[in-house]
Image 1 (cartoon, helix red, strand yellow):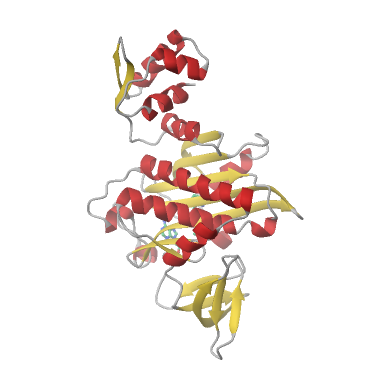
Image 2: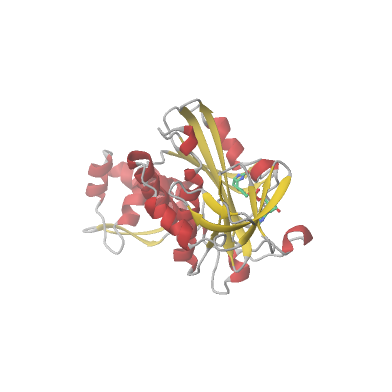
Length: 327
Ligand code: BTX
């Protein structure tokens, strides 16, 4: 309830909101509102109160923690639960372990560090403490399992747009799941599915974004970077990135799940693509072939041309696509 009180005070922006209005909107007593405000103040939120006007947030928290994560959820029409942890093995793994405990719920998991962060095909994802935003969304969309890879494109579009807005930059998307800034990887997406034929039990969309200024070790130095490494004016603000991401994600997600419409998502993926009009290496079953990437089709699959000029469609998950020079 505390985060709902905070969300209402935050939403009123420059204006004051009365204790009466909060108590009516949330169905709690005015003294309960006052107790929640006191508790938020103890957590560092600076909330002014003026007797004839009510409450106003003069300084919110920029820190991502359980309380601020709960306020993100309070505004969401898609997520109903949030888990914040200092440390987990993998946020994807944690989300999966909770999938059956909350039937019907969609939720978000965020951690400061992951001891076993994972990329695709069992690869490692380095997730040191306070160096990035490590998070997973768990959803139970009523769609055909074959459609699930489109959720990766939705997450990529939503996160690329969120970072552009918050950090004032231009993030690229390497089909289907990497986020690129100035030619290096700032983030990746790992979508995992639990399904039966024709039915999705749940899907977990894990996203890792390197934010903090840092040195990468020799294995990653040439291909990885972070927002602070690339953008001199940017100061890590996980909470803002997350808020804007959730806003975009749920808009695209609802459009997709309710109306099978991913047009806007495809447009962003095409405009931001660092894969199209490039020579790419496609690895299938241990074999690597070289193609020219020419377009994303209406399903979001990659269409390439082989050396003989024949078109071939690359399906999600089947392959690993690498640019010929680096990432
Ligand atoms: P991927 O398989 O496309 O990329 C993995 C590869 O990226 C690694 O083999 C390594 O070369 C490189 N890499 C490892 N760590 C980093 C890093 N911090 N920054 C840039 N490059 C790196 C991409 O898989 C999907 C990654 C998803 C990660 C999120 S974090 C939250 C969630 N939980 C979890 O365990 N995974 C996801």
